Image (cartoon, rainbow, N blue to C red; front, side, top):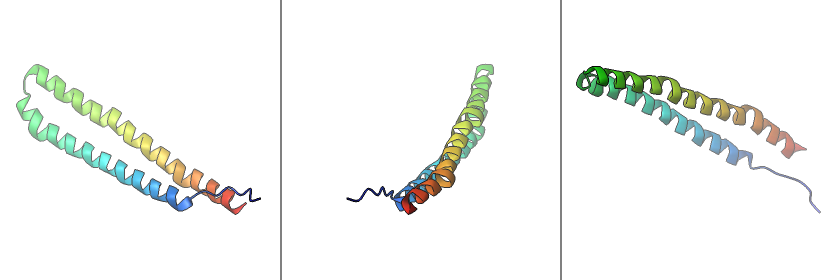
Length: 93
C-alpha cells in the first residue's frame, strides 16, 4: 500500500504565474482608470459636486483598490515562497 501524498508542484507554480499575471492586469487597470479620471472626468466634472466625485474616485483607486492589489501580491508571495517549498518538502518525505 502506497501512503505517499504527492502534490503537483508544477500545477501550483502555474497557478502562481496566472495569479501574478491577473494582478499585473489589476495594476494596469488601476493606471488606466486614473488616466481616465484625469483626462476625461476631471475636465468634464467641473462642478463642486463633480470635483468631489472625482476626488472620491481617485481616493478609492489609490487606497482601497491599491490595498486589494497589495493584498493579492502578499498572498501570491506566500504561496510562492512558503507553500511551494513546504509542498516540495512533503513530496520529498
